[in-house]
Length: 410
Ligand SMILES: *[C@@H]1O[C@H](CO)[C@@H](O)[C@H](O)[C@H]1NC(C)=O
Ligand SMILES: *[C@@H]1O[C@H](CO)[C@@H](O)[C@H](O)[C@H]1NC(C)=O
Ligand SMILES: *[C@@H]1O[C@H](CO)[C@@H](O)[C@H](O)[C@H]1NC(C)=O
Ligand SMILES: [Zn+2]
Image 1 (cartoon, rainbow, N blue to C red):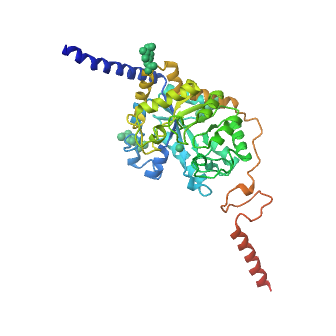
Image 2 (spheres, protein in one colour):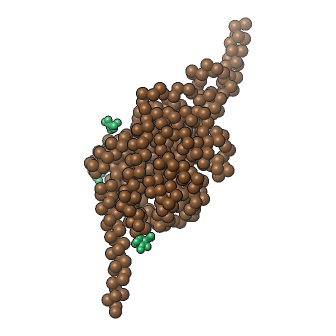
Image 3 (cartoon, rainbow, N blue to C red):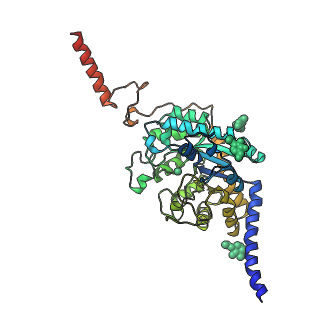
């Protein structure tokens, strides 16, 4: 009799292990492509982007969610590294700081060529898979990074940006962010302004994925309607399971389904359980839910590792993906559905974005109107109506100088 007592837990353990084994078998062939990782922000915060600092060695880096051994253990085969600069750089040094974060991603690939392969297209991702390297792509998180300039948008594309999140947690002069829905920010563009629509068109033309994490629902809907290619939510979860405005509501999930777009689920406890604590099972609930509402083709992973302070029990760092995959298998996801969530769905979207791009088409040229450019003291070269009303102090200074000058002439 005691033998059967022993056998039961043993059998349970074996079943659990077989899902984990199956997950690893699948992931050896089809590793995960994650939509959002903030390791570059950690490199800035901890080392001021000095990769040669012995403590910044990515093989031994401690106290971060991400390092090379953890990426290997987690079967991470593709990563959109976030080139992020906070909203307080808007109208200040946002462009410079974004360039520096893009540079540190390039230097990661250069310093660890055995691990990272910087790529800019879907073919490159497949090549990295074959070489057993982490396909490394750049996602720019927040429209403030382009400083309302189509020229900067294009230059970022040339430097490897393959998604742009239209806003971070602040409005830009041309797109509203999620805090508008929360009631913390005032609606400004009510979605996208005419210039914001030109940004989306230009992203389509270039082949930059439109990322709708962090934007308001009105921005989501306008962009989904306007984009000629599918879009992504690089790190957002389901609003119906956790009513946080960073998450995607059901009516938008239906548009995701219609447009064959993609929601890459965020693991941050506050977006998973709406509480301080969360569990791996609750992340699986979000994946199940998005699959139910938008279809298995709409599901992906955007862990937000190294960008958040609290992660679910069982998903503490990037090494834990196989445990989440095992849970999906336990919930009867088919192997094809799992492969979709791991990589095929993102590859499908990326290929559609590449397909829809057209570099022969004339670039968008019409600049943002001067009076929409925010209140900081930029120069106004090129604007014919270059009045000085944006920088009243400068106008004042100019007339004072003129006055003093004419007085001196007297
Ligand atoms: C990181 O440390 C390992 C040994 O732990 C060493 O082999 C490697 O060269 C170091 N890499 C860099 C970029 O410093
Ligand atoms: C993909 O990117 C590589 C460089 O990483 C480039 O050589 C190749 O031509 C690109 N492929 C396509 C189809 O654009
Ligand atoms: C998975 O499928 C099995 C066999 O069809 C069934 O017994 C089980 O209840 C299903 N589990 C879930 C979580 O749907
Ligand atoms: Zn974010």
